[in-house]
Every structure is written in C-alpha cells, then in structure tokens.
Length: 458
Image (cartoon, rainbow, N blue to C red):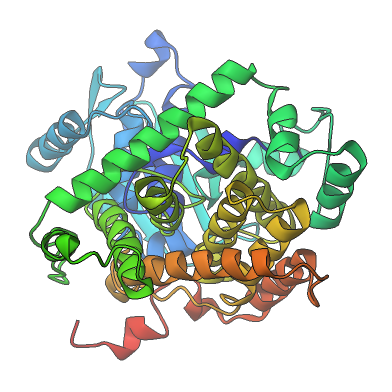
C-alpha cells in the first residue's frame, strides 16, 4: 500500500479526524453515488453509527458531520457558516437538504441511530441507507473511519482493494529498516527519498506548493487560537487559555527570556494549545496525522520558524516530508486511530513525526531521524484515549502541548547521539500495535474508562 504525504496531512474541521472528518467524507461519498434524477427519488435516509462512533459520537460531532456530508459538504472545502445554517434548518423544520438541493423529512430520533456494538473490522463504523417514499431501498453502504480521516467502504474491505495498491514507488519501504537501507543505498536523506516517491502522484512544484498550503492553514489555525477566547462547546465549560497565555508571554518578551529553556517550553505549549482549542471548537485544522493530535507538529515547526535562524521554505517542506515518512510507518505497521490502539496511536505517532521532522531540518542523518522518531514514540507507549465527556478537550488539549515539548527533546537527544541506539523504531511501532491490541476497549476512545469516568464532576 503506497501512501502519500497528503494522506497524513489533510485540511479539515474539528474536533476529530476519525469521528468528524471521516464520517463527513463517508456521507459525502455516499450522496455522490446518486445522479440528479436519482437524488430526487430519495424520500428517507437512515444513518447508523456503530462502536466508538456511537459511544462518543455526540461529543465529537459525528452526527452533525454525517449530516453535513449528506448535505454535500466536504471537510476540506466546507463553508462552516452555511453548514451551520443547514443544520439549524434541520433542527427547526426536520428537513435534510441532500446535496444542498433536495429537502427530505429527517427525524433524528428514528433516522439517526447510535449502536454501541462494534462491527468486526474496525470500532469506527457507520452505515447509511437511502429509501424511496415507498420504503424501497435505493442504496446502502457501510463505511469504516480508520483514523486520520481515512475511510474504507465495505466493498474495499471485502475485495481488499486500494486505489494505490499497484503504485510502484521508486524507493519503496514497508518499515524503518527498509527506509534506512534505501537512504543509504541511494545516498538520500529521508526528505529527499520522500520527495522522489511523492513525484509518482504530483510534480515537485505541486508537492511543494501543496505542502506550503498545508502549512499556511496550520499557521492560520495557530493565529485563530491565539485570538479567540471564551468557553469551548460541549458542556464541560472548558475555558480557552491560549489568548491569555499569549498576552502574558508578550509582556515578558522585553526581558530577553526567549532563548531560555523554560521560556521555549512556554511558547511551544502555547502554540499547541492554540491549535487544539481551535480543533475543539470545530475550527479549520489539518490532520497531523489526526485531529486529536493536530497541535504537535504545527507547534514544533512554528516555534522553529519563529525563533530559529536561516529558516527557509525548503526546510519547511523537508520537515513535512520526513514527518510523513514516520507517519506512514505508524499507519502501515500499527495504527493512528485512538479507537484502535488508544492515544499512543494519535499523540504518540504525531510526537514521533514531529521529532523526525525537526531532526531532519536540524541536519540529522537518516539514522538520527529514525532515532528521534523512536524516542518520541517510545515515551508515549501505553497512552490511553479517555476523553472526558467524549470531547476532544480534557486531557487532549494539554496532551498535545506536553508531546510537542517531548518531540523537541527527542530530536535534541537523537542529534547528540552518534552511536547505534538500543531499540529500533520498528520495534517500538510493533510494541504500539501489540499494546493497543492488549489494551481494554474502555481506554480506546469510548469514554468508558480512565479520566472519562474518574472525573464525574465534569
């Protein structure tokens, strides 16, 4: 299976890539099945959410995301204001505007079903069915949201089909050992190798432009997070803190503390908080590789861009390319889905990716890049996904800040160590997979264990 950089980094909306972006993409794909004539034959649509999508669906806005997808909205291009207007119409008039063109009656109590029983293939599953006015089934499909906004339908699962299955990369790799071997054999850095592979799908100019577009959205997300204040939606009454923290740091800027270790940590913390508060509020974010871990990579890179010398567009592109290489390894050999392996698959993978990207642009060898990723992931092993109230707020927002600082530390340690390290990245990824397999389901994005149940007052 060949994965692109842009499979890992996708523009979307909060609060969750697996529970918001994925379901919206699935519902959007479903409604695109119908041509204009067929669309107006639909009289009723039923959505069934299974497993984790049902358990934490309301907190992650899974129900709203699926409805918006049926209305014709795509996560990357959605007009959020128009989407909210359509949802308001649905609430007031019980009318669902399919593809933004055809109104049908929609009873949320009957036509939107939450079934906490998980389907066999993956804990994040949903089915959508469309019927005529005579209750004749027009089309039904089951989708799996497998993390990071990736979706697979039942046909792809059963036929083992993947559009990129037969893509022949110039420098293929299935694990970190093969990646390092390819780099050594062809005298390439990790970012150079990734760029050559990416050219299978796009020209170099398109790749660089698209990466910079991704980076622009990330920067806008940080700025929005630094400007917005108030209470995050969902009922926990969590206050946004990034704007207040930012003002405090700016007041201290004239004290020449920017370069101190403690002050550096505060800035990195701030940037991560800003992104994840925007994500929790349903703002526009980039999966990196998921929404729940969306603040780690932009926080590390934004800090580098703000305070480092000799920052260039080329280095930013190299950061993303190297980070994506590690994200691909995590997805291929374990998972980036919190519902599948816990938060180690989201925050852990993102921390490893950020560590690798930073080590690359600080001059690390491929071996040091791999080592940085190994350190970043190793020290997130066993991390559970236990969001209070099913919301991507507590402990998710702070967890991104902690991991962003950890990523910088991992890169620094790897760059200081020129010897072969004891544990390989491949072994750590395998351990993440096995740990996720052994982890109780109550710690996998169901809000049935951990902090989610030990913070009853929330």
